[in-house]
Length: 311
Ligand SMILES: Nc1nc2c(ncn2[C@@H]2O[C@H](COP(=O)(O)OP(=O)(O)OP(=O)(O)O)[C@@H](O)[C@H]2O)c(=O)[nH]1
Ligand SMILES: [Mg+2]
Image 1: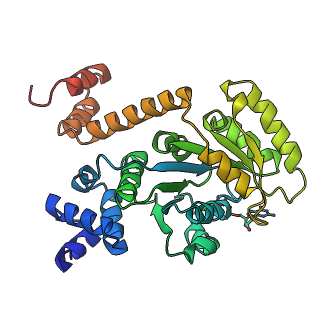
Image 2: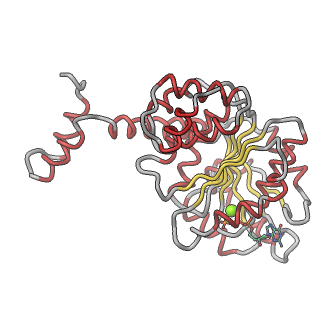
Image 3: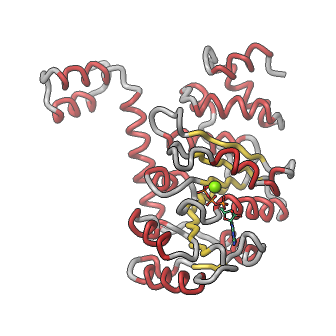
């Protein structure tokens, strides 16, 4: 058992050393949800020791689920979680809680909507508040996904909220990205603007029980024809009525990594990791001050940061 004091220190996110992180990870591997939750909190708070501990995770498959607000991502995520679980996979779900006031109240709502998998002991569900995350969210999210993989989850679903920076970041984290759309044209325009359409591996028009879904799907197909994305499947689903989910799961299972997306993903990961390195560089604060005082130019500051730290 992890010592009680360790759990308490982990809970408030201070004073956790490498051994503590390793014990939490081992406990999580042995099935302790409590230790897993603590470890995830540490990672989420940006604890570098905890983040280091979860490096080199075992193989798992992660799926980012993104799309405009209200299209049914949470209900669909819930259906997918159950479906993968029924196939014998150990499923974990990360729900990214948006920090915007418009959708900031969705945390509880999402929890309640995820009833189906919520009742399923085999599925681990974790909400991630973006509100108090300082620094790079994608970097921490990928470490959280790594922790989940260590804890034995082979399928990791990451539901992000809305359209924006986080959604583009999800491409750097998840192996594949599912874009969820609704029957309304406005939703699709939003996704096109944000450039998400080009990054998706699968596109779903959810709420196919409502009018306009067929039209939306055909609009999306013609939108996709212009890019590399002409082979991206566009599926009709009604998460509410459970229709089309089996086909969707089959499609996701058969995804193979695309070269374009995978090089884009590595590019984003490299940039993320570079940003993280810079953020933890001891010289950063001083450089920011000198920039403000006009002592160095931006270019000089960049050059200085690129030198080894003890030079
Ligand atoms: N008619 C219909 N309604 C659906 C379907 N799927 C979800 N909904 C409803 O759409 C509303 C929004 O569903 P959510 O799953 O919360 O949507 P979301 O995309 O997760 O929303 P945010 O996380 O707030 O962006 C709820 O009232 C659902 O019941 C569907 O297939 N058909
Ligand atoms: Mg949601």
